[in-house]
Image (cartoon, rainbow, N blue to C red; front, side, top):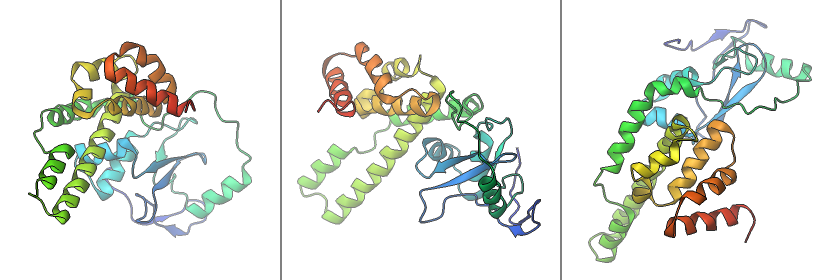
Length: 251
């Protein structure tokens, strides 16, 4: 693993200097990281659960975060690595190669962009974070609403609290999605039940787990939840059945 990025690089093809992109622009939701050999690329979004997990679990920003992202990407289907410098080839040359290459048929086998076995290096830290959140006594949205309705909070403080809770919950969901990829389809739901994730987050967290498994293994959320629904009972089962009907076009 490299421990830093060169700010400027001489392109090995045209010799022009260029600066590798290491994160999405302020007005961009994602950015592309190219293979060091071919012209395949992966798209990493600001909302990617693994990127969010790396930022919050390892406390990384900027270049250190980009290095971690690159480190945990799975190899390209061609066998080489994805790198922010695209094998020291500038974006102009990459575009020329893409225009001149007809490309090969897409592989039938699903290819996760993340190296799941390698991510298991931080599985302990991820699960420690989740357990910490399960045991947290931080104020939830219902408690915040109660304080606002009782007149304890002014509208500005209330709205700030809502935003903070939404950010916190979005981070929790991203980390749980990443954890579900590492736990795998055979263990994720069983472990979630054992540790009471639904009690903390509601049945919606089961949808998030299915989403994480879709990212990791390519199985659709609908297929995963249709299989898992049989193991649920009570309100939780009814909520998941309703969700399945909605995404299957039943309504």
